[in-house]
Amino acid sequence: MRDDQAGARTAAVGDRGGVPDGGRGTLASIDLLSGGRLTVTVGAGFPGRFGRPLCTLSELPWEERFARLDETVALWRALWDGADSFHGEILRLEDIPPTIKPSRAGGPPVWLGGATPAALARTGRMYDTWLLYPPDPADYASGLHHVRKAAADTGRAAEDITSALFVTVRIDDDNDSGRRALPGAVPPSGLGGRRLRLPQGERRLRRPAQRLHRVPQRAP
Image 1 (spheres, helix red, strand yellow):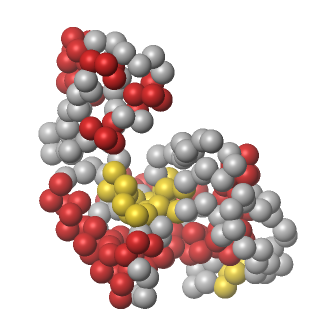
Image 2 (cartoon, helix red, strand yellow):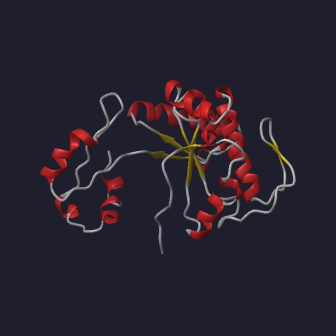
Image 3 (cartoon, rainbow, N blue to C red):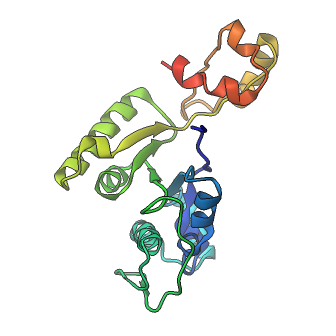
């Protein structure tokens, strides 16, 4: 039995422009091919000078990015459930042709990456998991509290929302190689970063996947 999941880094959905393709079959196909192991992580893009140019290139209003993201996810879920139309404030579609059905009823879980108060509230209202990046212990604790409060305010149970953490892991053959690589592997100061050492016996595991499965057990 396989317990590993298939996924990717957070996708800024609004930057793609047009009618989102994921709900039309791409994500459903991956979920089907993976046997229901797909996890989808989305975000509205980086703020300011990082994200605005992408919206401009996609000819999408910067001010609509949050609403467009939420409606895109709602559209995906509607299509995965077999809907043939969708009526949102921004996205309005009629006579949608049949799409590939995902492996799971309702489709794969959708995570939201974000740290603003609005992102926390939206996660609690409609997303399956909150993903914070870059991580800071204090921000994580307070953010998760706000996510769960928003969920409770809309009638969702706390256990309906799971939490996740984005970490970058580097695996080397020995301590010295790992230490030499750390200056370039650890995020710049202010973005968060923590060194995690695995015991010698675990570093002997040949397959990277075997080592990675031990990381959550060693994380503080």
